[in-house]
Amino acid sequence: MRLILPSFLFLGVTAFQAPNAFHRDSSTLRVARDISAEEVEAAQPTVNGNSAGSTAGLRKEPPAHAKPKAFATKCASLYSPNVGAERGLATPVYFGSTFLLDDAAHGARLHEKREAPYTDDDGFVYSRWGSPTNEAAALQLAALEGVDDPEKGLGMCLLFNSGMSAITSALQAVLRAGDHVVAPYTVYGGTYEFLTEFADQWGIEVTFVDGAGPEGPENYRKALKENTRVVYTETPANPTMRLTDLEGVARVVDEFFGKADDKPGTSQHDRKRAYVMVDGTFATPYHQRVLDIPGIDVSIHSATKYLGGHSDILAGSVTSRCEPFLHGCSKVQKIITVPLNPMDSFLLARGLKTLDVRMQRHGENAIRVARMLDEHPMVAKTFYPGLDSHPDRDLADGIFRSGRDSDDDEYIQTYGGMISFITVGEGNDALRRARNVCERLRVINLAVSLGGVESLCEHPASMTHTMISREQRIAGGLHDGLIRVSIGLEKAVDLVQDLKNALDRCDETGCDA
Ligand SMILES: Cc1ncc(COP(=O)(O)O)c(C=O)c1O
Image (cartoon, rainbow, N blue to C red; front, top):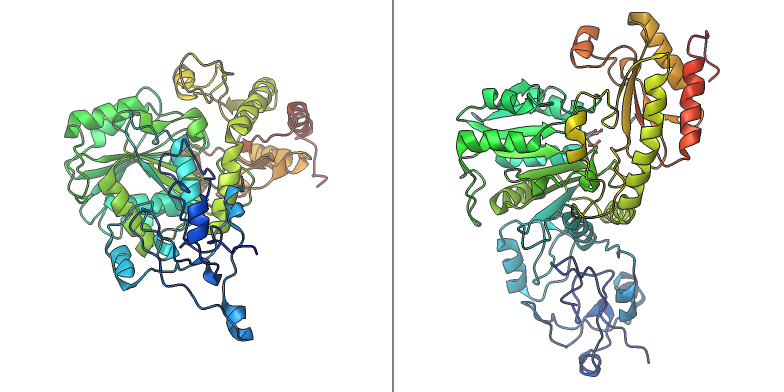
C-alpha cells in the first residue's frame, strides 16, 4: 500500500516538516532529505497530510483527520502527493490562504509574533502574513542581494505585488507626519506621484535634488535636515541612465546623523539616522549589490523588470539587514499592501534562475546598439553608461559589477540593457522623427516597461508623458525626440539593423505601421 505521506505541496502543515525545506541558510537551498524507516513507521496514512508522528521545531501534530467516507466530505478534503514530491527541483507552488494549526495555542502563538519577512519553524498561519512560495522566491533574491552571508551580516527580503507596492511599503514603514524626505528629480514617475500627491497630503515634506554624478552626494548633503527620515536614491536613473555615487551619499548621511545603531526588537522609528534607500531596478544585483555598501539600508527593485525577466508578472522587492525596518515594512505589507501571490512568486523564482546569463546578454547586445546610435546622423545624443560620451562614465565601471563575486573573478564588463537617445531636431520635428522611428521598428516592440527577453521601445513625449506640460517634461530631461529602448535577448545584429532602418527612414512622411 502506498502511504499518503504529509503534503509538501498543498498544505503548510506536515508530519515530516523538513526542517531544511526552506532553510534560512539559502546556500543549501531546498534540498530533499531522506526519510528514515522509523519516520515512515510513525506516519499514519491519512488524508490531509496529518500523521501521529512528531516534528522538529515548535509545532506538535494536530489530531489526525478522519478518513472521509461521504462523497461531499471527500470532495472537500485534501489528498496529498507522495513525499517524493519534495524532491522536485522546481520551486513548488503552494496555493492556499490558510494553514492547518496544531491546536488553539499554536494559532495564538502565530498571531502574537512580531512581523518579519520569513516564518520560523512554527509554520505559516495566513497568506497575507507570509506564504511558502513567496518565501522561497524571497530567500533566493535575498541570496542574490548578498544578505545570506553571515560575515557581511544577514538580512531578509520581502516580495510585493508590484514595484510601486514595494516602494510605497518601504516609505510608509518609516515615514510619519512631520518627517522629511530627500529624493532625486529623476525618480520613477510613480514614486514621484506618491511623494507629491500622497506623502505630501500626509504632512511629509519632500525636497528634490540632482542626485547624479560627482556632485550628487553634495546636493543630498545640502538638503538634509534634522527631521530627514529617508534619503531616497534611484540609480541608474530613468531615462538618462545617470548614476549616483552611493558611497558618497551614505558618507554624507553618516556625517550629518552619525552611524545607524539599530537594535533588533526596537521600533523602526527609534533610530536617529535617516534610512538610505536605493531603487536599483535598472541594474539588478547582477551589477549593483547596494547592501554591500556601508550605510545603505534598503534595496528596492521593481521585479516586474529584469528580475522576473519575461514581462509576465508585476512584482517588487524590499531587502534590508535592518531588523526594525524589516519589522515595520512587514507590518505595512500585512495591513496595507499585499505579499506577492504564489503563482507570480514561482514565476519570479524561475526568472531569477537565469538572471546571470540574461543580464550578460542584455549588456552585450546593448553596447552594440548604443555604438550604432552614437554614430547615426539622425541621433543627437545617446545615453548609455558604457559609452565614453556618458557623463558618469568614470563611475560606471565601479558600479556595473557584471556578476562578479570577487575582484579576481573573470568577467565580461557590461552596463545593462537600457539605452535612451534623442533624435535630431527640436519641437515638432523631433517629435515626428522620434514617433516615426518607434513606429517603423519591426523587431523591437512598441511597448512600455523594460527588462524582458524581448526588446521594447517607447517615446515618452507622445506616449507615457503626454499628460504633463511640455515645459515640465523638458525640465525632467524628457526631450521631444527622446526614445527609450530596453534591449532584449534577440541577436544583436537584428536589433542594430532594426533601429538603423528606422532611423534611416525617419524623415519619410507617414509610417507603414
Ligand atoms: C525604476 C523603477 N522603479 C519602480 C517602478 C515601478 O514598478 P512596477 O511597475 O512594478 O510597480 C518602475 C516601473 O517602470 C521603474 O522603472
